[in-house]
Length: 358
Image (tube, rainbow, N blue to C red):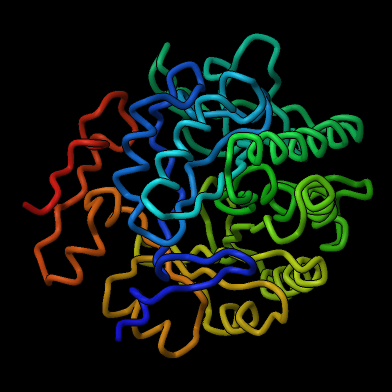
């Protein structure tokens, strides 16, 4: 029997199979509130075992991109409640990914009164799309004070509570891809001289304090984290101590008995490959399950599950373009090709209109 299609467990959660829908920013949340179109999109893809949402901000300050959702206002909790209900009705479990964009932001994408915050006042290279003025350079952030850090930790904890109120089964912290949590981890974006900068023990402190606060709020069995060692997205280049830094961070997360670590491997999209030693180190953790991601097709997913390289396998673009991906794989049917021109545009085109079999 196919391992991918067999029932799975993730800590206390029973899953209908071993496939995960990866988080994918798709910019359909008008006014940063989840809506009926988003509910349709997620429900279409809920034949997987676990759905992880697009990056969802715990704070007005974290809304770096146009039209991304939040988890800090009552209207957002209500919007997400309808989304989760549709996914649960199809049998899948659902986690919200909490993503604070940090320095990957522009003021035109933020509500009045919000601030662009980061570990250090260093702008990331690159541009940011705004609905008002098109592409604009990433803004120079304010370096967070210790009061700002304490406030942000509290925002993550409250957002986690809000997520359970909306019906989510748990929360994934976005500690990858150059957003706020990874901005603290990486020495290129964190040049602080206080207890949140310098050594890896200090650079990991914010991430671990966020994890501790969320665990206190909702429990360790409802918390996962996404990490991207060897990721270079959003102006986070490789550096010599990466292996030892992520080994230290993983050991600290394992000591907290998080539910899972979700490993980003973007080598299929041109990023440096994650060494087998890093994956094996994460697989060897005694408490954290491992979700694999990065360019998986059916054959490779089956092979890596059979070899016990991870507990679950996540896919992104394949399930974006093929809401019925599991059925297509089972039947050996042709796959729809994703349309990159519609990845981040408003409306149903390239979002809820990909055809299903039959």
